[in-house]
Amino acid sequence: MIRLYLDIDGVLLTTKHTQAAVGVDAFIDFVTSNFDCYWLTTHCKGDSATALRYVARFLEPTIVEKLSKAVQPTNWDALKTDAVDMRSDFYWLDDCPLQVEVAQMRANGVDARLILVDLNRTDELLKIQMHLQGIHQLND
Image 1 (cartoon, rainbow, N blue to C red):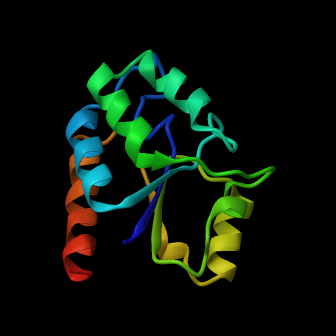
Image 2 (cartoon, rainbow, N blue to C red):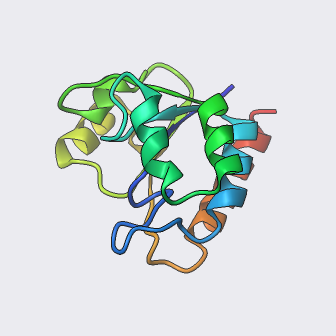
């Protein structure tokens, strides 16, 4: 199954006046059903509990429960890319990766697997879901 690395702020939640992103419930249903999901966020470094407590302030309990069962923790130090298995079949959703992380992805020839999220764009999660759905169908 394709791995999907998920950031929280700017992807599942808005960064300003923090709240659930538009369409996040359907998006989470889709990604947790179709991908092997991993947290790749400052809210999770080796243990999912912190990330889950954080999102629980903004998401419905049923969605948080789904995330707790379907999203695995990652462990990294300075760079999120340290947690990414560059040899695997993966995609990474992030709103603001560091330039050094982008350079590392490029150096490994996997920069096309970084999907930049901009929640200021209309229907952003729906558009990303449709893109991921196309990728998922290609791999079936």
